[in-house]
Every structure is written in C-alpha cells, then in structure tokens.
Length: 322
Image 1 (cartoon, helix red, strand yellow):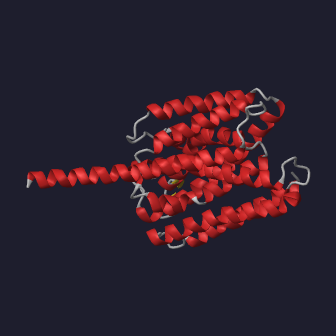
Image 2: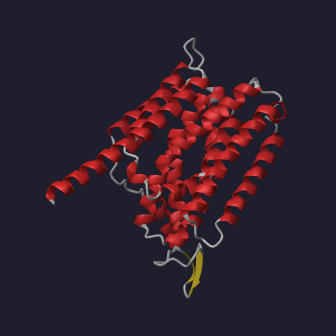
Image 3: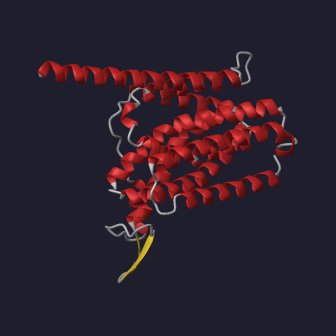
C-alpha cells in the first residue's frame, strides 16, 4: 500500500469528521435526523466498498488481494466492527449517566471521543499489523483472547457496567477540573488559572473505553483480513456512523435482549476462524459475512419477539388484576 493512499484516506477521514461536526451544529439531534445520518454513513461505507472494487489496483497496486476479495473483506470487516461497536453504545449511555452530561452536550462529547478513538485505533492497527507480519504465532494469541472474550460475554449479565475511572484519575493529577460543565468548552479560565471542564473528562473516558473495546474488535478483524488499509478503513467507517446510531438506539437499548449472546457467538466464531487461517480448513471470508449477518439478524428478530411476549404477558397481568 502506497503512502499516497494513506495520505488520501487520512484527508478523506478529516473531511468526513468535519462533515459530522457541521451536521451537529446547534447540538440538537432529533431521532429523524439521527436515522437519516445513520443511513448516510451506512450507505457511504458501501459506496467506498464499490470504489475498492473498481479502484483496488490504484489503492494497492502491489497487493496480492483481488478486487473481489478486497471488497468482500472490507464489507465483512465493516459489518463485524459495526456489530461489535453496538456494545459501545451501552457504555456511552452509562458514561453520560455517571457524569450527568446534559442532553445538548452529548453529540459534541461523542464526536471528540470518537475522534480520539480513531487516532488510538490507528496506532493499534499499525502495531498489530507489524506483529502479525513478523510473528505469525501472535495470530493464535489473538484467537485465544477472542475465544476467552466470547465465553466472558456469554456469562455476563445485561446489568449496567461500571466505568473504569483511570482516565479521570490521571487527568485530575495533571490539571484541576471544574465541577460544572461550561457549554462545549474543554478548558475554562478561572481565578486560579486554566482548568479543565467535565466535558474533557467525558471525552477522555469515551475514547479510553472505546479503545478497551477495540482490544476485542481489532484482533477480530485481523481474522477477516490482514491488509492494514482494509482494517483501518473498516474501523473508520464503523466509528463515523457510531455517533448517529447512538441517538437512534438510545431509547431502545434495553430491548436488545439477545445482543450479548450474539456478540459472544461472533467472538467465538472469529476466534476459531483465526486459528484456522493458513490451514486447509480456513473459513472463507464470504462465509464469515453470512454468519455475521445471520447471527445479528436472528438476535434482532428474537429480541423483538421476546419483547412482544413480555408486553403481551404484562397486558394479561393487568387484565387479570382488573
């Protein structure tokens, strides 16, 4: 992959982030607006997939991937990252609740948190690619970690998670933090000098927690493709649409009853796929795509059916009391 390709993609990412900043001006995101922008980001990812198919020889003239393989790898990686990042949405809700973030400040907090996560993930992808290119056995460590994570998710409950306060503790050691939000300001000049606002703390915690989740998702996507550019692109497009998706799903999060089991199965499947990479039993990427889509579809449908049964039982209980 040429340096010019990465520079061009970095410029594209900056433009898209600026577009996201522009569309949240006024700090008020309605459900309708969030749905439209979620569809936009989702469609944009597939437009980029089409460009990969037609321009792959320009993007990566020395790659051993065919345009078809590169396109399928990107789509599978994107959907995998998107699916795994849904769990991040629950963490965002917990962070906003813990720090009492006002509703009108949440779009901007999410934006800068995601920007920080993009930069940190890029570093992790570079390091992961270097490790895999020199030490193939690292693949098996990644696989073991994913399988362990899958079993951990299988045994976890849907109760609210706690936030690791480490980013906040480190920040408070470096600079004093005010008790109250000062609009979208990250720093505020007081009588004692410049101090940080809770907004900076929230952004740091969002970025930190997203990277913690990336410890699962980035090894997972390396089982789909070890082409660094495709890994990076899938992560960028998954994170760009994550913020709008949060505002679409914020009132529906408790309805995804079977999200954890679905993510658990995906982790276990990807872990096994990673173990089999390079062997005669290697699982083709298109099968991974079908498994991923099928698992999330079944999880959503079963969650909706379960909610329908719960509502029906509640209505029957009310009628019996009356």
